[in-house]
Image (cartoon, rainbow, N blue to C red; front, side):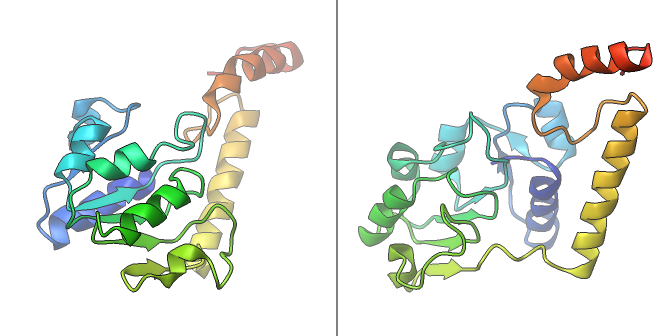
Length: 189
């Protein structure tokens, strides 16, 4: 779920290393774009019904907050695993607790939480079929250097009048473009 930079890399690993068929849901990409990134475009419900592993890799936004709840977990197969390295609040922790408790899915890999880090007595940590980490998978020297470089490139690009390629809130671009034009005399592209 989500075939951006992280989702694309996961698709590459799953297809290339593990020989998996990758179904993908990303409402912002065409089927052609998704195929180029290693996934077969499907609707979210179809992905949940058919997948052995559901990996969440999308940003937290208005349309993804609460995207995976009791209804969506109920669509998953009993042998399926739910994995998220995205952001807290995309899935409903209470609904995930219920499906794990009732053994309606096989397990979960959780790197993100509604409140980070989770307390040691967090209900989801009681299960032996939950693998948990404190959302630090990307904390490497290389990752931090790349994050700084990418942020600087985007800032410089925006100041040069270029639309940033990793714009988190694209709905603000038109207002920014108007302010930019007033300040610098040309419309950013």
